[in-house]
Length: 273
Length: 274
Ligand SMILES: Nc1ncnc2c1ncn2[C@@H]1O[C@H](COP(=O)(O)OP(=O)(O)O)[C@@H](O)[C@H]1O
Ligand SMILES: [Mg+2]
Image (cartoon, rainbow over the protein chains, first blue to last red):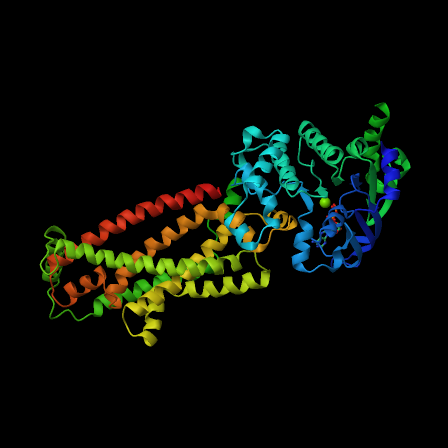
């Protein structure tokens, strides 16, 4: 399975390509330095690294929620860095994003939050009035069902558990009909059970719908279990890029630096399985 | 040991501010005593004056009656005052809605919010009545000056209230919607306003209550018609104490109703924030 993907990657045009991407905030040290990688359609990629490594920055440069200082990013054959506001909006509709803290509108119902994912496709006026077509509503219901939220459709989001909120987050991304979903630490605030449910959904999204998924993760064990490919980041640089089986203890030590001792335990679990 | 500590640490340390306060109070008391002693009472019989005043109060509050105004007239005049309050709240609300969006830290750049917040804080610092008098210079004393002046103050009050209501929605939620391709106006109407609508309505009603009280005063002080103007005429021109009583009761009745609703709304907002 993974081998096949590897073969595919060589033949098909990459969905996403980053070339020499660099990001400076205010300080002298770059948050990202000369990032290069390309992503094939349908890949499930985990980005791991210690906190402050630049994982969130990397993800946000892809949909330009953060502007990279230099470098080129192309998505689906379009050079993102050059897009004007209106075209950028159009491009963002094809990239879903989910967050550690879900970032839902708490006072609105599940279905209302899910439908928000369609706003980007609408004219300003239609969006302002909240005019959603019957097909859009039907599709929202289908996706809500798919994520096992049928009993929560009209509940306000502040009455949901963390795991349910994150599933609403996934639903909101899916209704965008995205080619790529970016996930910034989607399970960092969840208990192990809910985390597993979320990761399983993300894997299904990738395997069954063919949507490319890039997940920032804190847990190496989760990355090993779910990913086709792992990218290790340390101090703004990619220090590992390969299949989970190639991620050796030395590599993990390199990615995590001094933090790595705790992680060896997790890695031990992998070999136990 | 404990005693020593208490001696060293008095419960209320005498700071510079409290010292200033005490000196000020002392000076004011001395001045008051001096003034009372120095006033020339010769032509006024204190006892009689007191008795007359109480008598007037008795007439006002225990024998209210309509002479010039019928009950219906009084009611109609209250409605006019309500109209003044409604109009100024409406104008103020619409303008404050726009300014509130630009003053909310999660919606606008920091420089813009700072400018607007500073501007409305300045307007708020000056009482409504003063704004009416300031606008009266250009518009003449009357309803126009009253409407403009009250609107002006309402804008500043509501801009602060609205922008704080808008800020209840976390910036990260707005960023999430931006990331999905939604634009600013769509986010305002689909996420920001739905999240804050109950606060917005409560604040608006509270301002309406304030504007009602102000509108009564405007009728009297700025000749802006309504029940306040009748109060002014009855007391200043007709010396009709019994009708003053009637009008006062009318105003109190309406004010109590508005105040009750407003207090309820306020406690709801506070509960939500806690
Ligand atoms: N808005 C910002 N302004 C300035 N520095 C930032 C900002 N966001 C992140 N950084 C810095 O950039 C580096 C990478 O941060 P981030 O991408 O959040 O890392 P990660 O997600 O891997 O924890 C950190 O050193 C962080 O302090
Ligand atoms: Mg992060």
